[in-house]
Image (cartoon, rainbow, N blue to C red; front, side, top):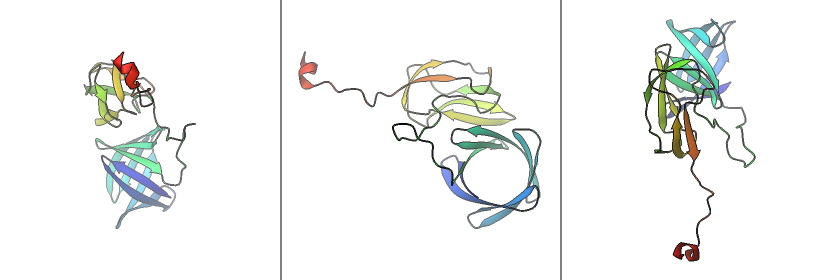
Length: 179
């Protein structure tokens, strides 16, 4: 099975082939890695990658899976899965800013009234000694910040409200502007 692995601004194709009851071979580019895993709970895994151990947290997101390893967050999307689309035919993604797991807000990167671009960092949360930057799902204006630094937050809790950019707003005619 092929996955798209995204870390920061880089995306690579990750091919995964089963290798035993609790393992697989991961191929990315010209490199293969033997991976053995044990599921500790619904969202926690213990991995051994080429002999190196790591505790991993996995959370489902609208884009696929968020995988947190040693303070870094990777996003995995099944390359074969169809993209979710809204009625308008555009890709549907998260429409709210929520943490993927119980976390603590460590930094707020925006202010009320600030214009933000899609993908811009809004809030940094920390869980299991790993920081994750939550980003704007679309361009718009920050209308409300629902949390404070140091506050504990939970999945599905909306941290920042954004009023979408008015892309379809009617343009005033020259006669209307003159009046």
